[in-house]
Length: 339
Ligand code: ASP
Image 1: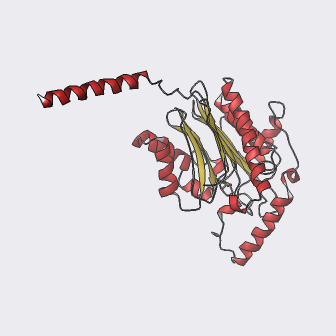
Image 2 (image 1 turned 90 degrees about the vertical axis):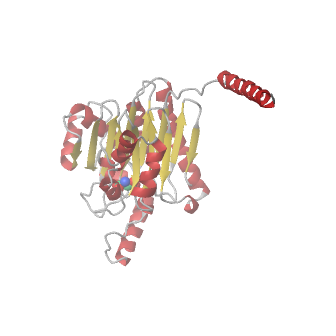
Image 3 (image 1 turned 60 degrees about the vertical axis):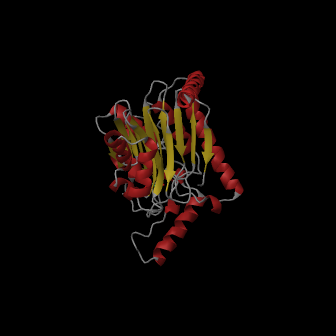
């Protein structure tokens, strides 16, 4: 009798709980999402308050550009390209103006963009006079049958594309800033002191930019642009020019943009690796990102931003900091530099 009474109470309670659940509004679907990074080499504690404010403001402005395109129903690919162009024009970042110096005292820039809808992509490496390498990378994707053009070949392609779209040319000195020249001088001294140890390259030399986006049509895109590593050999190409390493996008898994010691990201095929963990092992975006950042890459090698087809965003790094920002259609807005 008592048992029957308690059983009845339990069933009534259960029914009430499920009614309450059914009445809860289902979490609204994420219609669009975007994340931006400004490099994993950042050491927030070493920056002045002004330095932190300037980076936060720049990331916020870039995020806004992409967010607006997506909110208006624009394509993820356009959001990625336009967001990165803005960061390339900002001397604070190691991409476009403000790119680091290479060992020859000049600048060689790498960039890639990838369309998750078609898995088409384009890249340029070691370009020296293209103001916005990300736009040239997009033209490699849409106007050639190739995926990567380098050096003189890429410059010549830029000549041909002059009338096509926003391909502005500048002298190589346009990319130079005093801050980067001083950083290069210090790096040369440091490497001399390390007696040419070819692996003595620290995370503090980074500052690449990247963007990943999901649009209202359900398409993913990713892009990355960089001046590479300070005092790199001329002719050196990093992960930011390599699809599947520094940049990757596939509507079936995720879009990824990386920053860090490019050689490690190439050797570990980081962008594709994350997509593969999701596609073949059924991991969530964040599980896959965690696995690669914590277990595949060595400490202090860099970080990445990623978004999946449901609008989940993951931003992780194994350095001191990574300048990063994220927004989505549900009102998420965050901008962070440190842990
Ligand atoms: N990954 C870039 C490279 O190795 C550098 C960076 O992220 O700052 O070229």
